[in-house]
Image 1 (cartoon, helix red, strand yellow):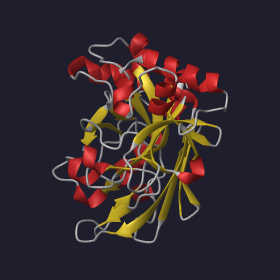
Image 2 (cartoon, one colour):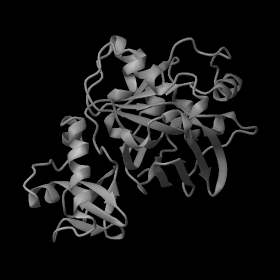
Image 3 (cartoon, rainbow, N blue to C red):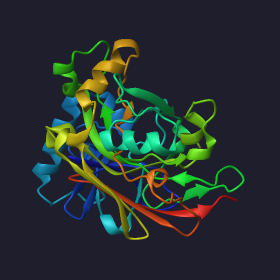
Length: 304
């Protein structure tokens, strides 16, 4: 399934939907029309476990495009939000997870040129999250080095504690696109959270594709452009630590819970790694995509 969080008008609440062709199907309303209770939010839906996807998918397929009145809207008539507009806790970020990005970072960001022996983990607060087309904020009083990073994000579907690598993918609910915005000049004593954790620094979406539609997350092309100029292009096959390894590693010491988000790292091509270095400024437009999931577009605007 391709799941979204949407708003029908600026006044209405955010709701859970499923894409069916060019329609957004409201899953709670469709369920109610069929006598099946379903929640109105993505996090509540994830909490129900894998059976919720099967039930919802069955309802959408059964309707076969003939949806009850009030249960479906044209995609062009709604506003898509971040699939999880407000995560329950910080996003798990993974640094230096593609070989060429390790090399470019070592040249310009004072990180080690040696490949990490364990995943490099940082976090991004829930307040970093923005949805499709929302502005990335540029505060020139804080940063002169705003940078881009396209990433595949994995969303945890059930509680994971000391998970074996061979079982790890069964704990994934789905996948989405995330841009790990980074203020390179805001690192503090080697710590990254202020650099990567400022408001609007985690554009996410436009959809969550459930894990059954992406059985192997290590085969996906991903790319990013700035002002229509390609800056990054790679494939998730080149991750140093694959999605299953990340889940196994994190869950050894930190319990992963339904709705937790793991941003799996970025390939080479970031602004800091270029010669000369390139940074984002108000007026720029960032577009990022992951194969099989979708595309995000975000203007950079001056923070007020």
